Image (cartoon, rainbow, N blue to C red; front, side, top):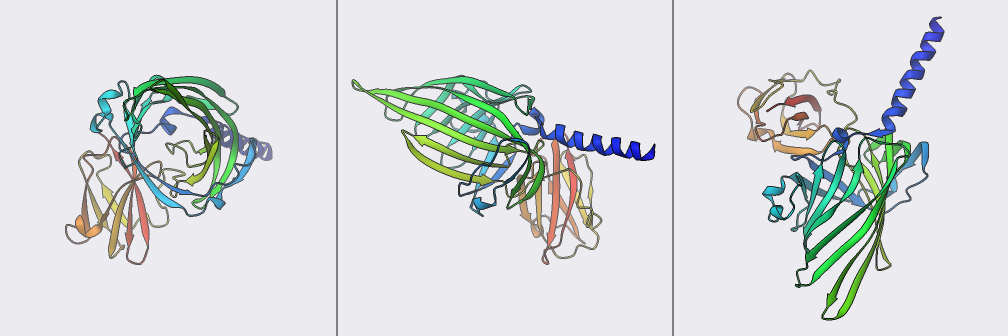
Length: 337
């Protein structure tokens, strides 16, 4: 009987991991104001095979160049008022903004602001629907009309097909991760305008494969090919830091204390054996860096530090201390408002 119970127990554990890999949720996937996403952008590599229990290796993307995207409120951006109904905006620098509407049922593209002008979508594009499970698929049309920076009325129309086409284990230069879902994202659309009686059309074909680990908001890796009037560009990217749980660093978690938690305004840190602390880093549960500072900036006295968390949205974070010898310790922090 004992062997039978052990067999059932291990079967249920395997099944639970499989089911976790097969479903993405809104809370585990949607971007949230306050997130800071860092992606290393490198070389394109083959996305590999679709199906269940796959093993994908994207190490050939290489180290790449770090690109930082901040999730901010639409109202804090120059063109936020042109994107009604959106509640989060991705600011990638250089005056480029992407506006989204997130909810329990979908993550939608509400438009962009960039060199081509202000482009609010009259028919928003469903980037993801929730819950999204292995083999789920849908096709969603989207559309926009705007006046370009050159003063020409431009029309965008097209559709996106999104398919959860595989799950399994993913390897990048950040590590190896199980229970990962792959999503095949395929956009086909066109921008058309009229230059004084001369029609002009730009055709786009964007073919992406993205890997998601539920609980890490946004993809942890992607490879894509985008065709603009038949001319291709290819890219591979991955998240250099990926959270796989919400546990502290169990080896060094006694090297400092953190209180209070939950916190709303300030957090006090007292070290216990972690000398010469050099940096303090706060990250979201997705692993995205939220803030990093020199320890000397927040030092009070006798190995104590004070952190201001008043601007952080409610959620679960990690606080990580690293000393001059490279020894790190991490603890979980809960912020409530």
